[in-house]
Image (cartoon, rainbow over all chains, first blue to last red; front, side, top):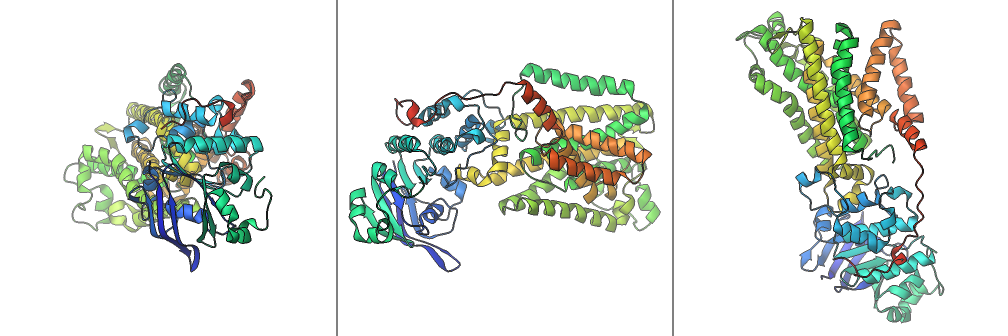
Amino acid sequence: MSGLTIRGLTVSFDGFVAVDGVDLDVPPGDLRFLIGPNGAGKTTLVDAVTGLVKATGSARFGETELLGREVHRIARLGVGRTFQTATVFEELSVLQNLDIAAGSGRSALGLLRRRRGVPDDVARALETIGLTGRLDDLAGTLAHGQKQWLEIGMLLVQDARLLLLDEPVAGMSHEERDATGELLHQIALERTVVVIEHDMDFLRRYARTVTVLHAGKVLSEGTVAEVQADQRVQEVYLGHSTSTEGAA
Amino acid sequence: MSVLTGLGRPSRLRTGLGFAGGALLLFAVAPAVLDDFRLNLLAKYLCLAMVAVGIGLAWGRGGLLTLGQGVFFGLGGYAMAMHLKLADAGPGQMPDFMQLYGQLDELPWWWKPFENPAFALAATVLLPMAVAFVLGWVVFRRRVRGAYFAILSQALAAAMVIFLVGQQGTTGGTNGLTDIQGFFGYDLADPVNKETVYFVVAACLLVLLAIVRQLMQSRYGELLVAVRDAEERVRFLGYDPAKVKLTAYVVAAGMAGLAGALFVPAVGIISPALIGVVPSIEFVIGVAVGGRATLLGPIAGAVAVAWAKTALSERFPGTWTYLQGALFVVVVAFLPGGLATIFAWLRGRRATPRVSTVVDGPAARPVEEGVPS
């Protein structure tokens, strides 16, 4: 297992600095929550690590430098991500979605053949995300929460060793959130997981460690209790909300 | 099953029967019921249908709205016509139009390789594919897509016409390459040989159909739809979408090239007016009307629109353009998936709707062996 090591990561858009010299260490197998007010640079940080936006500094996964590589090359190194709005291939079935996610290493000749049956890794992922019964349904017909699970399942079959999840429980019911939390704990047994989340209740229950971003910089870092006790965090982020906030 | 996907998997038996039925229709029924003139027209329509099959793959499945297939159709057509003109003229002679314009003392260097029939035949398919590869590589790597790609491809068609018209001495200009007499030693004035050309066209169409069918149902076909619907997502799964799109574009170009090559013996002419912006758009209209994401929709649409054009132009000259425009508007507005939507809808009414009664979710079932690694 590998961890994520970020040093002096800086992203600026036309002079506006969205991520400002962030240092971040996510050890192998961590379940790290990344929180912060809107505009803190959470998603931009993930965008930089996955190659979507240009950044300076360094972001290493294990020993491998990620910055400067193309998006699909970073993905092949074992870095997978989801998006705020669940992005699945709506016109394809659940099985096809997973099969595509599993296949970036396939040869050109293999691609020209038909899929026969359900590949083993896809079957296991279906089991894990609980969508075995929806195998042949179009992904577009899934409920919102199920689409988010499907995305996580796609990361599993893609064999991502580092999962960067952008608000995976947004819009989910309580039961679905609990199920997702358990799932993330399962996944973090063998992979490194970073979750961007606004839901404080969810964070308290499932985060192993937390990093708070504010205005593009790391404000605080530690366990949930440590971060909650941090005076600065309470001021900028938790101060105005003691109860559950975010997407409910 | 959604019309824009159409990834339903008919059994081998049904597929085999479908192809057998198609072959029966094209090789037995059509020659029996159509006179020589109509059969020759059908050969022309089937050439247009070959272009449509490729557009169905590139546009219907790949989302590449290519408004410039006339370029590849033209490359194939001109490659074939150049060889046939040289063959008509005889060894060492220049084609008739070059002698007529009298600007040249000898055959231009780029005409010479086309004297070789093997080179010319290979060029009809490989030349369009090579051009599409170079163009597609540049365009898709730079992430040009949507309307920008459509406009770019159309501009290419316009540019090619301007080039051909401007080089009258070596390309025949506006007239194109006309009055083609023979086809690899066979006299095209002979009805028997014309019928043979029709059979060659029909056979090629079936082969292209089989190729596209395999591409659509393979893992590549699923990936292509994924790229069409969410290109960025595919990138994050570790694929390079540019290569996926490039493949569909190059295959479609090769098919258009072969269609252009067969169009020449079937119709006896290739000219800028047949490959420019307007014909390029007409290819797309046929595909849209038939159903761009289905296997047979593009063929049906292309043949129907071409047939309607001939039939209506015979009776009401001048009104066809308006009718064609109206047809396109109606289909886009009311049947975005093309006429194939109607068939899918009829089939859907017969099938029982599938309702999921399974309680889903990661917690619905304990995971015993943990997370797969």
